Length: 416
Image (cartoon, rainbow, N blue to C red; front, side, top):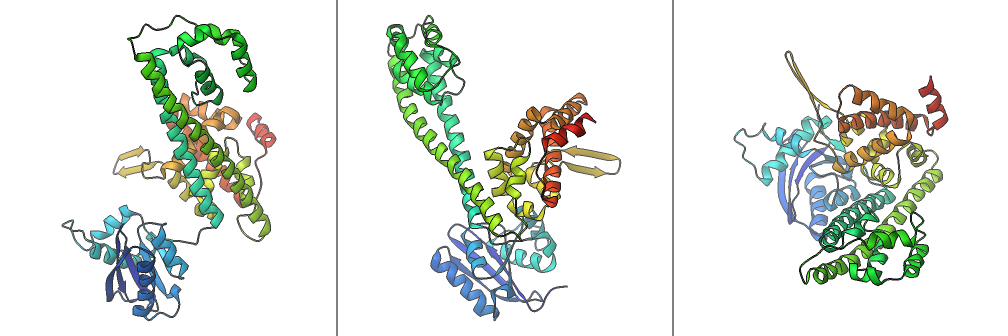
């Protein structure tokens, strides 16, 4: 049954313009129009929807769109429209109801969306206005991830250059972006310099960075190993390349530290917001999730930023699908095949992998489950996904009851 009091709109968005298709409650076309992207164009879109539909309030218009975020969604929600998102793959299947030949254009896509929303609203997800802190947290968590990836790229390039002419330096530290190693290279950039440097200089550098794994004598023994015999000019060119890389690594290190500091501040502000609004569901969510074994700064920020709606609903099934830990079963007759879910949120899937990996190291129950799965022939990745599945179930149960993780109780249950 469709609600004839409402109008339905489908928005096929693009980078330069957006095609809007408007129908009444019975699915009859009212009008369609294209709006340019920009503040003026989006404001005109909202005004046109209100005027053309004859609606008095924005919530009388149901809007379908393929993306659950972005300026188009935010503009419509700000004006009071009820915006519903649909997965592009589902949208492609609905398109087959209109054409079997595979024809595709903006007008048809907008019409397909509005028709699907009117007849199959259960396939859509009603969007809610995001919390400002949540929006900022999501952006900073993505910034931190991008900076980490950039840091890995730069340190890998630095590793290749040192391998060319000064491989002894690689034996001192696995993390080539560590501040003390960068200072050490600037002090001892070549094997010739290592042969002439004083032990007191190295000792002072180690003391400044509080490095206690080895003393200055040990560092010099490593750096003064017999050097590689390289072609003339190789040392100079590789050193010049490392100089440019170090400048960028230092910048990324500072930005990454700032991003982590900001993530910590935003999670604290979420706690403060929850305490200021004691009647809401989100009370203590941050503390509960942070108490779980294996949850650190990055995993916590990613969960809160990318799975906020599902966490608020305590929707275990949605979380399993979003994070990719729920397998896909293909059953037909006597055949039954279970495969890994590929259609998931990549950032959440990566966060779950690291959550499970760290939990196996520090939580007895997770370690026992991982060992049992491995003994049954499961691969490392599959076993970790099963561990992550259990952790999600525990997290949802704790969020529903409002309790934090108690390691002592977990240890008692494991022993029994």
